[in-house]
Length: 421
Ligand SMILES: CSCC[C@H](NC=O)C(=O)O
Ligand SMILES: [Zn+2]
Ligand SMILES: [Zn+2]
Image (cartoon, rainbow, N blue to C red; front, side, top):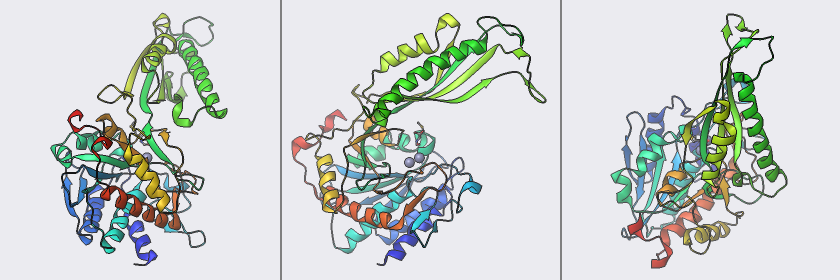
């Protein structure tokens, strides 16, 4: 099959507008299902939450008793500011000079979903038959937290019956020759800090106003942020290994028809923070720091978490996937990438969140991997793009990985004891 046919299938998928908050999930489901038909894969659409279809495909293995391989991707994408893009985000415009394909979802992560399918198309054409069963899940809602997508999926009977042994999910592009792979991710803690204080005249200097109380917290939080960031700047820690904290909203003031009342110090003020906590961080000490230093009762401060995902899995262990000799899937991944004449760097902690956490929380090994080398990271930004040759190369890499994974015959000590799950 020629490259242009493969690229035009990618463009078709990219042209489906699955942007949050109103993704066209059914059109995506129809597209994936039709691809599955052309590949003779078993397909079912699970509507675990109404209006949010999850497409599950199955390539049955010769030995169904072996734990299966799950290739996960999400079908939704983040919104875009259309007028700020060089090419409309759902045009999937291919720049003839560079070969870059511009589209929301070109990196995150419609590329991966379709590369899995193209790799299977090649494997089938070559006559390859999997020993392990290979599943593909196309899940909704990752970009809004995945509760109704991967979250419901891992809790379903269907999932339990799949007997999954290893999950592949999304990673990040790499600006270098080597791909990146992720064995864990930071947990999102979305914190709102609230201050109260006596209201008063805008001309009066007095202690304990809500604004002053909030600003003291903001200053403390900023110092912590700077210290963490310094570790990254000095090259002592990677991005995923520090606690990040960024202020994402400020809410205070007394509205007036022309904006805000300018000579009144308000009695309430709030600030919101997106905090990301590495899986091995000391969760309890961060909690203590928030309660005692960031929102101290001594200044009448209070706080609330809009979201607080534990850094541990359901066994109370850090929710990370082993990337040493105890996890054969990691070795097989590295080996199969090399076999495809590519390379992968040292495994990293994903700086944000992905659906992989739902699998890791259950104790399943999950590796985040999106084969995009020599690629900048305009993910969630304007002008997200992927070069067509990188896309095609990624298909070859998945062909190698899927072949290796699906052929691997388990040695009993190579997999987690099933009764634990
Ligand atoms: C934590 S729910 C939101 C998930 C989102 N995932 C990708 O960007 C993120 O902000 O990391
Ligand atoms: Zn994503
Ligand atoms: Zn995303």
